[in-house]
Image 1 (tube, rainbow, N blue to C red):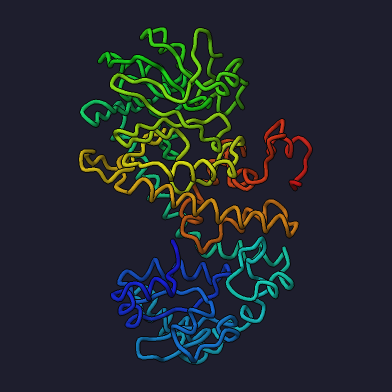
Image 2 (tube, one colour):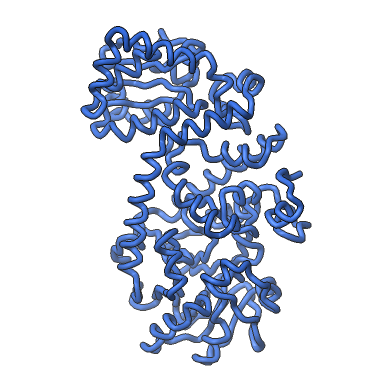
Length: 509
């Protein structure tokens, strides 16, 4: 969640009023412990009685002229609606007294001897904040970054990072439980379902299989085949073939079979569907090269999703457009998720069939063949299109159009271009973090941690799921891969993750 800024308050008068009548909390956004405590504060503050502001010179001058940068960096400050200023442990006690579940801490914390003990412990952390600050890898551009980088040590950094995690652990576990329940609910609603839209022009077929079903339940990634104006797009893997055949009993019109890219859950049934329907297969030139022959998958992916067969002749190579029953679709190269990725765009209906070129605004555990620098360029290209309906390759639909009915967990009421813009902002921030980290010569794991500061809600809300993916895929999909995706070169003969594992190295140059 983005922190409130001075611009937010200045541009929205009603929010400015609420900010002036709330407790304004000035915290150091470059400190893991501060970030962890702010997360708890937001979880407790159901009535929005507080506004949390990360320290900067501009923020301090706007909130209260009595606030000094050096003093605020030393300890937490709270400005009450009456204009009172509390600092350090007294600020913690003030905030604790606002909520029923922590009221006793606030009341006792203001009394002798607990107030003295609290001040002593808080003072120890405050005096050592630069040693404990999570500011390596460029995460600390809020204030005094050079002083922090000069004084911080990796041992202290990891101690602080783990302390921040432990403080948030109950929130992490609760977020994991809630997310698991949501994923299970969405999977149950989409099981064996098909979603007909635009008067039958667009149909989403939800696919399943005994082992593939573990993916949407554990990680929320649905498997689908998209039918659009006579074209079947990404017909799933061999282990989803029975599910696809079940959908085809209704004999939908299919005149072409197209793959957006060469990943196994998208191409495993190309020739099978072509033989069944008589529709020719269309793929890009690069995808055809990847599929003839198809590389041997890591055993985890092969066991769960299924090893696709090699692409067999006859097949056709995609051109700049592909004809549909009532018009044509533009074929747009969008490397990033993988080098051979393409999307299909209908300029008449303003529909983007994105495949995996867009997998939500926040996606933290990519496959080893992702190149995030290319992905940025591809997303910038998509921003130039007029998009009213964005269909992801794994079933989610982003649109504000009223002719698309609601389907909880699948149809997301969001402007598609706003969703793409959010992903662009996220990837640009990551690129800056990672570039600074490598310039400072930091280990990959430290850079990874700086890309997932606990102050960002997405970092801790998805932590359990992300680490579960890392564990079950034996590191094949992980947050580490996200870091490496910004430093790969076209000359890499093998994904960097494999090179590191085989050589036992830990750094990338």
